Image: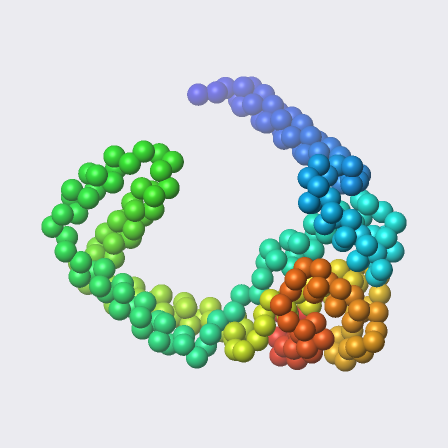
Length: 251
C-alpha cells in the first residue's frame, strides 16, 4: 500500500505521462496534416496512372486539383473511402416478416439439436490453436448453440426471441426500404455533392438539376471515372426525392 506522498508522486507521474502522450499525438497529427504528397511518392505504375487520370478528369471541375498533385491525391483518397467505404444501409421491407420467421425457426432448430456429444465437442474445440480462424469460427458456432440450448432449458427461449424480434422491428424503422433503387448511385450522388461543395466551394443543386450545368458534368465524369453503375442524372433525381423523405440522406 502506498503512502500519501507516494500516491501524490504517482499521480504526478501519470499526469506527466499523459501530457507527454498528448504532446506526441498532437505533433504526429500536425506532421501528418502538413505532409505534402506528389506523384513521385507513388511507386506503383498502375496507381500512378490512376492518380494522373484523376487529376485530369477532376481538374476540369476543381481548380485546386488541377494545379496540385497533393490535392489530387488527397481528394482521390477521400472519394474512394467516402463513395465506397460507407454505403447506405437498406432493408427489404417486403420480405422482413418472412425473414424474421425463418430466423426464429432456425434458432429453434439449434435448440432441438442432439446434445449427447457436446462434451466431446467441447474437448476437441479447446484443443484448437490460437490464430486458426476456421477453428475459432467453429468454436463460436459451438458456443452460440450452447447458449441457445441453455435458454431453451431455462424455458426462456421464446421470450429471448420475442425480445430480439422487438429490437429488429425497431431497427428496421430507421433504415430506408431497398425497393427498386440503385442505392450505390444514390449514395455516390450524396457524397459527390459534399465534395463539390467543400472542394469547389460552390453550392450543389438540392432539387432540380440542369443536365447542361457544370455540376451535372462533374457527376457524369465521377460516375464514369469510378465506374458507378447507373445514370448520374437519374440518380440525382432519385437522391433529391429520397432526401425530401428522409433527412438522413442529406449531407
